Amino acid sequence: MGGQQRVYRQRIRSTQSLKKIFRAMELIAASRIGKARDRVTAAAPYSKAITRAISAVATHSNVEHPLTSERTDTNRVALLVVSADRGMAGAYSANAIRESERLRERLEGDGKEVVQFAVGRRAVSYFKFRNRELAGQWTGGSDAPDVETAIEVAAELYGAFTAEIEDGGVSEIHIVYTHFSSMVSQEPRVIRLLPLEIVEGVAEPGDDVEPLYEFEPSAEAVLDAALPRYIEARVYTCLLQSAASELANRQRAMNTAVSNAEDIIRQYTRLANSARQAEITQEISEIVSGADALAAS
Amino acid sequence: MAGPLTVDIVAPDRTLWSGTAERVIAPSVEGEIGLLANHEPILALLKAGTVRVRTGDSEQVEFAIKQGFVSFDHNVITIGATPAETDED
Image 1 (cartoon, rainbow over the protein chains, first blue to last red):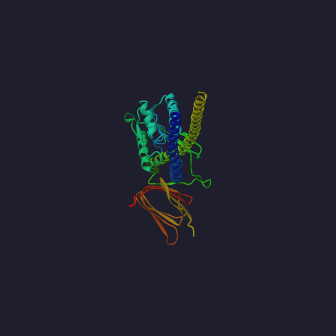
Image 2: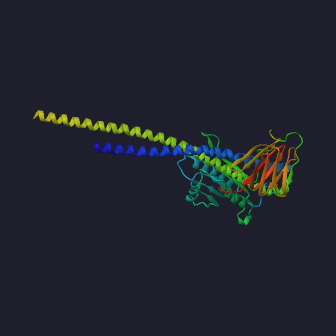
């Protein structure tokens, strides 16, 4: 009937406007992702430089530093999960959070007490909904993190690691972030930030003779000053990688949403057409039967 | 002519400068240090000041930094630095 047709038309119109929104979000994500990837690339040299510097100190001196040695006086561990501020990115946040929950279970299985930190509104609301306490949270700008946020996060984590037990000191720091391998593949990853495990990027000695480093002012001082920078660089890298992953996921999710909207529009167009045809058929049969009745009388 | 030193100056979010040079002068915490080719390996902390890179006979580039470190190893110099805030920020 006429009413049925109108309902279909309405559905088609609303789906069309949704489709426009999805398309716009897809294009926005697509345009930002290039920039996000550039930032990942741009931050890599510094990260590499500081890693090399740290590993040089670690290999060429025998400094015992609290940050490089295991802490045994407490069983509290910090866990930072990096998620998005907004949804509409498919399973991006859910995957990161799930990975973090899995790690949490494992840590608690080892008899550790987990202190939770969260970046991104999605993770924050996830923990709030479950009435779980957050030791620290940062929201806003998850798709374009700046150095200042990274420094803040790093300072907080670093502070927790160096704090006394009664002030909430922790013995380990883990980060769950989403690694950006390529445009089509991003997977959640876990890294242990502290205590340090320096393995990557160790400077290759040019010959058999190991270069004897001179440290200025001293190996301890260099380590003291460089380690917080190193942690900042690592946190910043994680945030940038996550941002790029978020945008890639959003682009993909919105792309799917657009094609789903197209499917729905096509389906409703068919239904609307057949409703219109049914109405016409009915009208014709009414007229014909009316005419028949008149002719018979 | 390309200098004998390979220099990379990097900030946390970008590479500031990269190229070859003849001499680099950096403001170490214990005073300015000048680095020429075949210097012994060194890792030094930097204080606020200016990093000066001499690329040729009379060409020189300068960077104002707030803090950072310099590492020298096999004629490769890496300077990781937080750039000093400039007026344009």
